[in-house]
Each structure stands twice: as structure tokens, then as C-alpha cells.
Length: 184
Length: 214
Image (tube, rainbow over all chains, first blue to last red; front, side, top):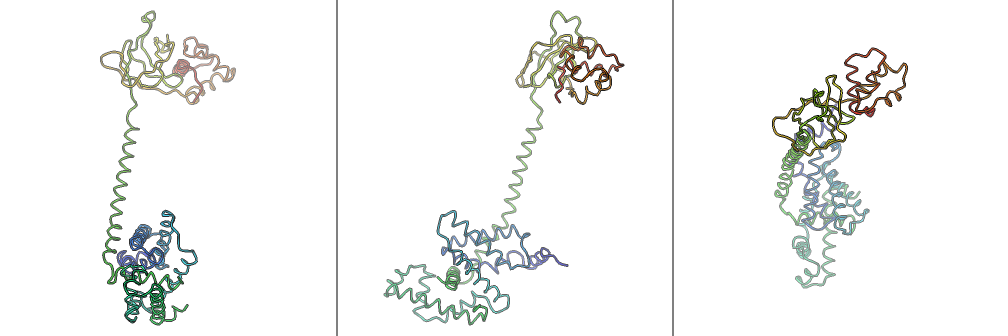
């Protein structure tokens, strides 16, 4: 009979820690970026969480998903970070909802219905010109709504409306691509 | 932001952060993960060094001093050897008269002039505590061995075996005459057959102050 620890060791022998990091780091960063919105902080949180995971691998229950386990550590590191910075934290209910959404995506990947980031990349390509431009300026250009409004010659509410519309369209697109789990 | 929005927002930020994937991030994590054991080995080494240093400090022999052991002039002819004692605790083996003896520093000591019977003829009236490496006299120094005296282990069994039938322990201790074994009834007036070794042990106990503390 194989114990969970033996199963984990087998998994690690087969994949190696680096492979696990490669498989999961982007989703972990997406989780961290959803709560902190700052790239450098999110990278630090995920790096620290992965190092803790590397150190505590023996404590890991192999029956669980590696990504979900490390996500829990990222969450813990995020709470520590908000305490140390005395900064406002995301409400607990919203964190729970965020976790639930990531669990949905974990399940979609396990069941072979696709990777959410790959699906999102495809969905983005389906967006219209103005919306894509606004989305790029906001996320890739990291510009404020006021900046984007000035640059595009529109009002701030229009920018916000376009961003919301983009999110709505992408969300619907993900539901279609990842299947029923997204409606759960 | 709704549940969908927050999660989706994180995904969009991640796609914007590294549109083509991020090998550099993985390398950074792996570098740090692989460096950790080295840091741990270094810390373990540092801890081991500290332990060794502490052990070295603890294992270092206690500081000593040297003192010339001279009997009072009036007793010089009767004195066969000199002895250094730690009151109530231990005696160092006797050394020749006027010898230089290496003794522990920082410990209150008494000097005793010892007669042919092995008992103290004289005990210095007050203790002397020497500083580390303090030297009183030139020349080679003897290093007498220290003999610990424990009342419960070394004395009480003798008293129990030979004296307890007629005397209580308290009576015997009260009659002991500390530092004066030659005049102590516990040593000189034993009715029961006490062996020479047992008598010598009783005498040394009295000459050390007849302490009953462990």
C-alpha cells in the first residue's frame, strides 16, 4: 500500500520540484495579483510561498493538489504582508470567492477541459479593437483610467465601461471554453 | 469587484506581466530553493562552531594559582606535610612542607599542617582566595589531586555502622569539633572497632569542617 508521502515522493521523482513550479507559478501569480495588484509584491509573495513549499514538502498531503496547497501559503503570506504594511486587506468573503473560482479552474484543468490562462489568451483575441486597446493600456501599460481617457480622447466613465465590458465578454468566453464548471 | 472580476483581473494582470511565459521567475525560485540547503549548511556549521567554542570554554581547565605552603614556625618540627582544603567540600593530597602547590583560583581555601597521623595539627585561621594565575613563590609547583568528601556517601555509613547503637546522628555531628580531628571524640573515642581507613575518613571529614551538607 502506498502512503501519501510515498506517493508524493513518486510524484516528485517523476516531475521534480522545478516542473511543479513551472506548472503552477502563473496561476499562483494570477492569484497573488488579484489580491495585491502590484507585480513586485505578487512575485515576492509567490516566491516566498514556493520556497516554503519546497522546505515543507514532507508535510504536503499528496492527495491534495500542489497548486491549491501553495495557494493557501500565498494567501497566508498575503495576510502577513497586509499586517506588516498595515494596509487594507481584501475582505475574507472576497478571498473565499477568489479561492472558489481558482478551485473551479483547478477542476477544469484536472478534467481536461483546458487551462484557464490559455483559454483567456484565446478569448482576448476575440475582443473588439477599442476594447482591446483600453484593456492593453490598463493592464499591460499599467495606466490609470484618467490617463487612458486622456490618451484615447474619451471620458473616464467610458474607459470604465469599456473595461467592464471587456471583463464581461472574457468571463462569458471562459465559460464557453472551460465548460459547465464555470457556471458552478 | 465581483468574484469573477477579482479572479479574472488577476489572470489579466498575469497575462500582462508575462505574455509569453516567465522562465526567469522559475529560475529565480529554483536558484533560491537550491541555495537554501547551502545557507542551512552554513548556519549548521556556524552553530556547530559556537557549540565547540562553548564546549572548549567549558572544558578548559579551571584557573589555578600557586601558593607556598608553610606551617607555623612553632609546629614546623611536628609537621610532616601540608594540605590545602576547600572547607566542607574537599581536600588536596598532602604536599611536602614549604612546597609550591598549584591550587584552584577563586575558591576559598584553608591551609593545614598535617602530622604523622595524617590529621591536622593546625588549620589556618581564615580562608584565602587566590586570583587566577596568582603566584606566591618561585620554582616548580606540585599539583595535588583533589579528594571530594561527601558526608552521606563517605561518613554516615561509618557512623551508622559503629556509633548509631548508642548515639544519635545529631549528637555525633555536634561532638565532632570541626577542623580538630585530633581532639574530636568522633575520631578518638570510638568504642567500636573502626578500621584505620574508616578512622582516616572520619578524621578527614572533621578536618574539613565536619559538614553534613551534600
